[in-house]
Amino acid sequence: MKHCALAVGALFSLLALTPAFATPQEDETRAFFTRFVAAQNAHDLTRIRAMLWDSPKMLWFARGEANWGPDAVVSKLKEYYKGTWQLQPDMSHFSVVMLNDDVAQLMVPVAFTRGHPGEAAQVDTFLISQTLLKGKDGWHVASIMPLADTHFK
Image 1 (cartoon, rainbow, N blue to C red):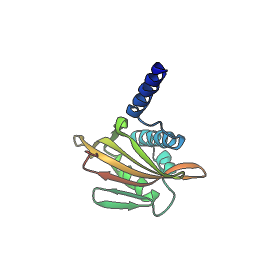
Image 2 (image 1 turned 90 degrees about the vertical axis):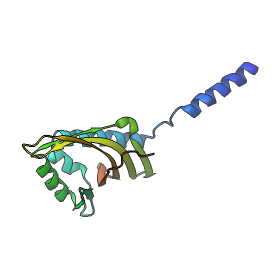
Image 3 (image 1 turned 120 degrees about the vertical axis):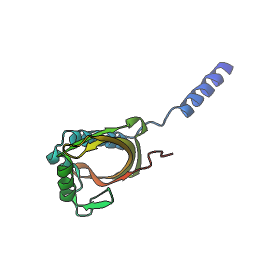
Image 4 (image 1 turned 60 degrees about the horizontal axis):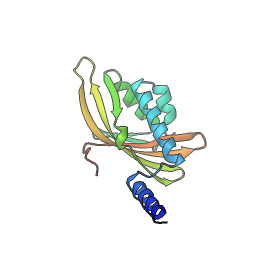
């Protein structure tokens, strides 16, 4: 009996040190975000547009500028894609909070390699906050907010 109690105690200690298992929605949002990054790195504006929330309230706030609606976001990305634009998220720090079954808030540090055409690219890391909404046809990005302070605790 003593060995059983020790084994159970060891199991609970191990579980306390192990991160919680992701829910199916968290796994879905991680996979969606990975596809969204791949679409950006491929500069695939059609695929990116399909992944954005189709609403004039969709927001990407970057460089002090609000880009409202998916068409404005795609237009801004098209401009950026004339130069260098590559993303490298640190998925070991990917975090998602399910606000309900259809709304997720994610945060992840992302290294951006970017530069204007003909200029040397630079790498900057931002903490990216995205709100995702799930509709009948899957997840969509409702907002993107890059934060310069990447030391999220």
